[in-house]
Image 1 (cartoon, rainbow, N blue to C red):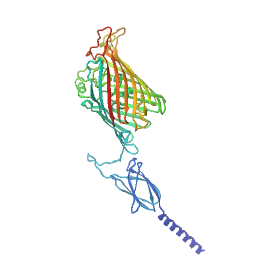
Image 2: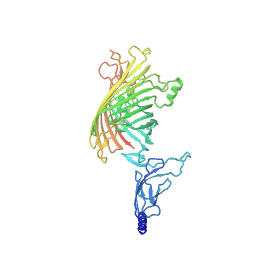
Image 3: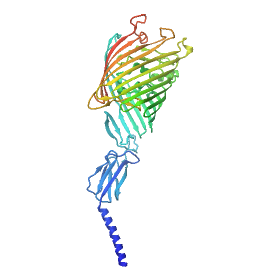
Image 4: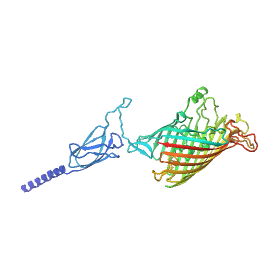
Length: 525
């Protein structure tokens, strides 16, 4: 009995030793993911080696993942990456590890020890330089543009000079930080001046909402809020000058699969010295406005979209420049060209104004490489009844435009629900160019009439413009644009009385009409 018990004990002992011997001899697989200490951003290209072994090193991929086959256990693996302290881990068996690397002590330009260091991947996304972490919680990218324009004018043009110019020379940088925070700075250096465009901070929440604060475009008019990079024509329609564009303010945005809503409160433009002097010397308030835009897409498929939108804004007069009257509004616009700086349609300062209501209606339909779109924009200015003549307590500016576009070759139109607008076209083959043809009609009326009168008490003028455009997209970054327009002004479009428009003639010629040929070469990067 004792002999049998001894044999059993010896058998167990031999089995235990054999298992441990085999375990030490048999290898296996070690997998893992490497992160910076305290971060969820994976570390790419970290080097994984077996200490004292003859195995070739392996590197982590873009997701920080590695896989290592070892001949036996236990082993000591070492994880290293320039800028981080080397980490050693003892592994007893097949495992899936999570490794955190601590950064080496580095000080920034202000002498403070850096607590967080994150590696960035660099790539060109459709021609735009992008720096980002693998999990996209940190992103930095540029949005730069140069437009070189030229124009020639024909007909009854009151000595309009032909010429060329740098229409836009923009430098912008945008960022996403910590996955939710974002910001943008955008400057325009055209005309040898520095003009601040966008300068804002935003918070991006879950489920497609965001809050934005700073200087940016008020949510009004799809044509106005669409960046100039993606416009079909060289210049926006004249009536969009009525849209409020950029002001200091705060807005809230939310969008879904078929809807878009943005609303906000805004004040003045970024103050210049003249505006600050006006505020200092006369105590002029900055003024404010409440603006909102809503869009809905009852049809929205991969290759078809129907867009319907409305916008509204209630506004009080802003700070004018020094010397201009307070409590006034003014509408003036060039004739859809930047080279000719004459403004035939111009209401001058509409004084004794209390408030203005803006309203707009949008519609657009696109199917693959065809698109039609149009907007109606109007305003009613309420003036002080005690300071104006009878029947002149209100003033109006209104207008509309309609256009159609056809991408003749190699591309389709793309609609972006996050902005409720059309953005960069979809190339079918990015190695080939795209030819586009478009037609547009626009009409603007800045005259205000008393009931029963043929002569406006506010003679801002009216204008209609017919435009045909031909564009060629060399690639995602380079575009050439060509457009011919015919401008038909009425007799009241005289640039505040600067130009002879034959007002005294009851019949016959009654306005300055002319044609213009415009061209642009554009690069976006």
